[in-house]
Image (cartoon, rainbow, N blue to C red; front, side):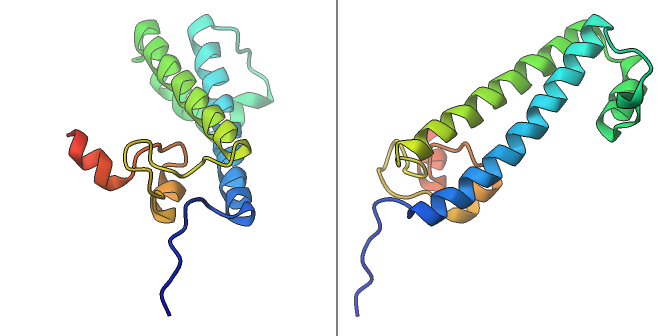
Length: 127
């Protein structure tokens, strides 16, 4: 019995990926806001100071220059944009399709890098 070649992920599979992306997006936005606060020194000593991410940033803030924090914030913002674009692809039902080969990106890769647009095969060809 030959297995049918899938051209896209099922709605149930897309929902699983949507949940993964939403969780990562929430954390990424929190981290971005913390970085912005470090840069602008808007953060006062309130309950947010107890979050583990903030503690790490706080401890490193003495050595972390505004320029470095700015670069980290830029990277975080780019990551957020990639995750948001992945949500759009889920809505369009094009999520998980390699933009080079047109084949499905493996579930393992998407779970690790949910905003991936290239299969490992295509990514290796790029390098």
